[in-house]
Length: 337
Ligand code: PEP
Ligand code: MN
Image (cartoon, rainbow, N blue to C red; front, side, top):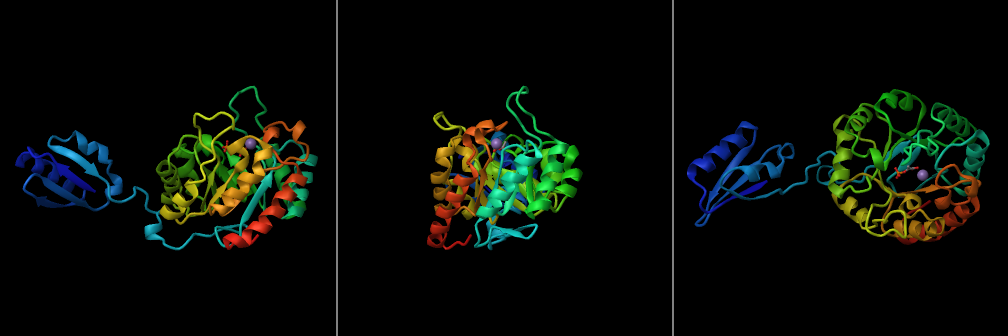
């Protein structure tokens, strides 16, 4: 971190600031120029908030020179991380496909959908048992019974399961029963939940919060990693903007940004990003062209009767068609399916 002092900063103000920084374990290099003094701060600067130093008398400007996240940072881990999701690698050359309904509704629905998406080439079955619904009057999910139905579908299809957690109280239960634990957009900054998940070694699918910046998102990944769990997969699912034609705005530029800043895999959820099933194919292909490591797609065996997110859900046939298109595209971006 670099701190530029005002030209009129007194020697006392500079000394006080240096003492303050040194008392926090930093080493300070002072460079006194003709106009002003510049302080180079070395050490664990991630523990400092640059804004706090603007309140010190005599400070003109504070410039962070390194990112505030470490374990998620590509600088300290140049090679891509590949996360093993019960035998399915996420983040390597092979694209990963998470597919399944928004909510687990009943045994027939989840198992039938699972068999159909598996037949098309999906790797991991997704389905919500605990649903974070905007309205308390909307279907809230089958909860523990939903987990049982996912386990049943998994034992029939052999597919690993991915489902969303909402409470830190359920981490142990999910750790025992779920293969990939999803943290939804609404809980991306539920820091107690993230830290608790960090105590497991389970792959965590961390969706981007609807108004989270790239740094906010990577710092949330850092919470999980700092607590001891390196197995984080990022998922872009659209952000809130002024545009309301689509449910959210898919931010594809975040993929190269994440790839530059971090070694963590990043996948794209075109379903929540658009809210419109007819856009899912195009946005999926665009995501793969932009460098995504895979997709999370909502697929329902009867979208008009879905208890949540039917309008954005593909039918199994539409999913099969999408996978066919991805097969055509994968070699162009040097990926396999
Ligand atoms: C979901 O995956 O069904 C979901 C609720 O996603 P998000 O957290 O991205 O809204
Ligand atoms: Mn959904």
